[in-house]
Length: 240
Image 1 (cartoon, rainbow, N blue to C red):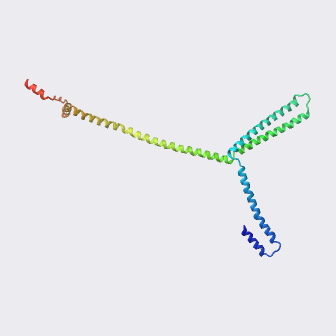
Image 2: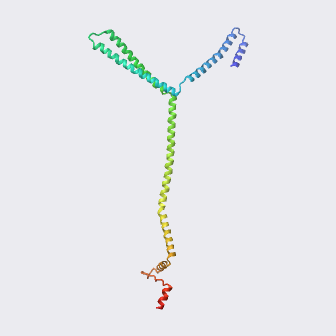
Image 3: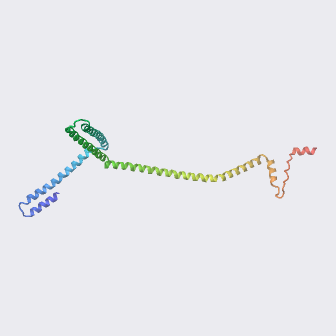
């Protein structure tokens, strides 16, 4: 800004035109001061408007109080309309002699009451429109976005849990499919173990069972196994 001022001043000095340099220099000096004044005024207005602006809670309280006041005014206006209607009917239908002055007075009040009722209704519409400001709409949109994101997160978690449950059900079905083979192998191992234990505790029955198993397959009726003779029994039989 100072550079432009000096440049213009040098141009005025180079131009040999008397009487014009002073006026141009005064105009150049007035323009920066006017710009500074406008900037300061705009800054002051912005700061003051920011300080005087109501918060969200204060706006809600103010709107509630205004709504209550407008509701009372609406009731009063409606009451005045009904009252003037009744008075007009009274002074025109229920009297023997009609007084035109009173009728015109009540008609005038009736029209004023209707005008006041319309004005209150218009004020209520304006208050309702001003209640839904852009800030409230933005905050409501943010709240809705947070709710939707929370719901989507919960849905993803639920899908993960369902996939885990599906995997566990598949593994359980596979184990149930393999359960008969496991049971049969376990029973076979248990049977073999019991046979080994029986052979160890009762060798006589094990020998008979082995002899019965040693019969050739061509013999339809295998002979019964001969009983084993103990040494004491053999000596008694020989003495007799």
